[in-house]
Image: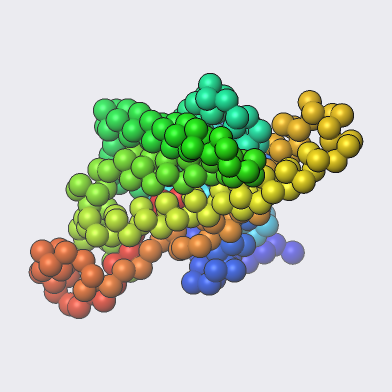
Length: 322
């Protein structure tokens, strides 16, 4: 029997986005690393199906399961603001395969300055691409701004890592293993605001409940970017804090001392185990579409909204990015 799709809304979330658990389930679906392997033609099919569903023109015989799968691919590969296909490496679904390799090697090669410098540079290059790909695309970023943010964040990460590495040379070995996390946290506090500085300068696009654009707010941008910084640090924290403790104990075992060449691959694998859970958990800490009381906005924007809408608008909404 053919499914009735007359009341189906493809943009309606499958899980309640007002609850933490609902958001985690949503991001487990969207950040599924297997979607990275989906061929381009299938992603294009998914976009076509999503657009046809929005217009109510899906082909006869289409099942709900097909539309849900198309929406999963669409959400994982296309930007929510522009609808453009995102760079594969910059997608949140690439965080597990990309992040596990970089995190594993950062935690393994933390003893020498050249190794610390190289892996922090690799990590910040990866982060810069992820931050740019998942920004709020309604606020354009120039090449110069991207270059400045990339150089600043890389410098902050390398300086923090090298400086703390030198300070902890006489500290217990475990303390030295935590240096990469300190560098990553410091760099996230620089990289994300710098990469999205245009939003802080000109404001982020805010909309009413009917998705009509009603202005740009710097306060909303600051809230969104702060939430993204917290999410990214949370994403890295368990793996980069707990994994050194695990490796510190494992490396004392006699069998581990005989297979030192497998230490790095093991750290990469264990990093992936942490990220599989932490990517959706961290992304789900805050709603992607933020709700903000109009009373919190800039006074001049409040006046503009009153003049434009005519009737009271209690809340505005905006995409904070990921």
